[in-house]
Image (cartoon, rainbow, N blue to C red):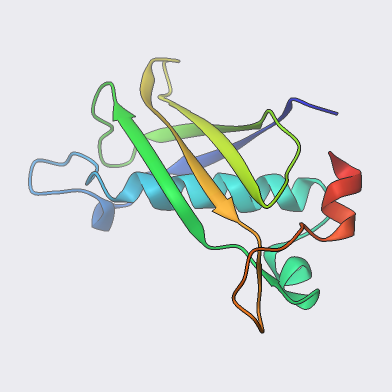
Length: 132
């Protein structure tokens, strides 16, 4: 099943832009999250399902490279890819493309699996291990 890929479409909202009409740099993290949660939903699960097992998934690392600006009202496609089986961590790689197919940004996030009670690293829920 690896690599697993998924794409989400996002329209840039006015509140995500600066005075110049360019997407604020921090909005890209939110776009990554939309794609990541969409990818999990496409697999038939959600963060709620993960949390119901007593496991939390905090972001422990993030990186973004900005290639060209996205602007207000643009339609972006956020591609997310999982290339490796989850262990105590899970990495998601992202590519954001504009309507013309131009690369807007690339990046990744790493999320840790953490026991809700002990706040210690733990294994991913069984259903995630079987998906990948």
